[in-house]
Length: 365
Image 1 (cartoon, rainbow, N blue to C red):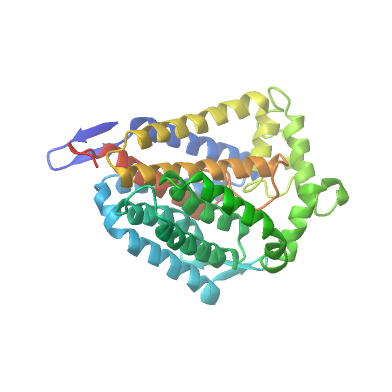
Image 2: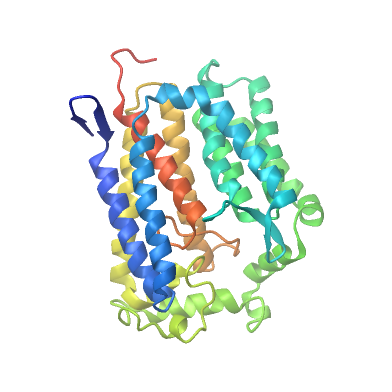
């Protein structure tokens, strides 16, 4: 943890997270250049997002954590208003309205919600006695489910799952009883037929069917995951070489710049390249967990823990998706996949984490 002192102000930052995230972002641009088959305009645009995001992360890490506590309600309401706006003035693509035209880029408000919700819940539970009571548990669950439904209606099941997890993580960290967790899990299992028939779109149902029986339609719905597995397996130990991946460069592998960019990395850099990439992710996660354990108060511990677990979940879902361990839900690889909204949301999240870790008080709650 560093605090650089200047004549008029102190600069707060965490050198470990800053270096690791910057390195990961640069590697992401290198991977994206190959995955996009040398599309320099795409990489340049992503590079602008990276540069702006790093500066934004540094800027957000400067206020005291009390600032985020005080604006948590406004941040959540702004995210909800922007999501509602997508239903009326949003940009439609592939049958979904998830984006708003901001002039120089398109914003996906649900990416902000997955940051705003855990910050708000951390603030809400900060003022309540822990372990959390049944009353506040049900109030929190009601809010989480309502926001999940809002995002899933766009439709965006992948981000909706991250939103619901972002809220549940805070509940878990706040001391939710294992008995309640077990009963809730049982009720969720029993409600699966109802959820299947009333909440999932036909294409989402097909993705789940494909997950359980990928050989049923190898040239149709199973094509993506089949080609992803071929790409990952063909990389071997050291890979085929940078820009030498046959699956991606011969257009067998779809969505190479976004959902399946990990398959491109595995094919071109092999097991060694994948292990190197995963080592950076694991280092970031371990650093975040360390900061959560040593945070100055309960609000910071809950927020850092929740945001860190969101980052871990996004990584896990993407890796599980491209390797066939999970259904394809459309989830970017953090700091690597193309996409401005997802990229900036993680820079915002880590800016908040650094702020909460670098500002200390003499007294702790």
